[in-house]
Length: 100
Image (tube, rainbow, N blue to C red):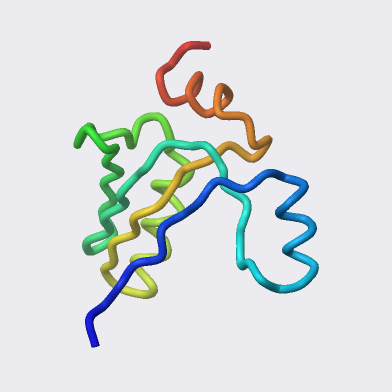
């Protein structure tokens, strides 16, 4: 049997809540952020954005935490969305781009 992908379709917020009550949809909230790949190798960390730019300088506390985890758990790679705690894209971009 071939592998098929389920494509997303637009749905209104009203429809989402109506259908969500009947368990016809599985969904999760989408956060706006910057896609980052974190590479941890022997305690050294490199954060790369989607343009392959190293962005360690902007997120030193994340680099430190990932380094500590790497020393205990070993090497790993994470690909994910870096988001601001306040869920505001502009907050992240100001920090990321040094716009403050």
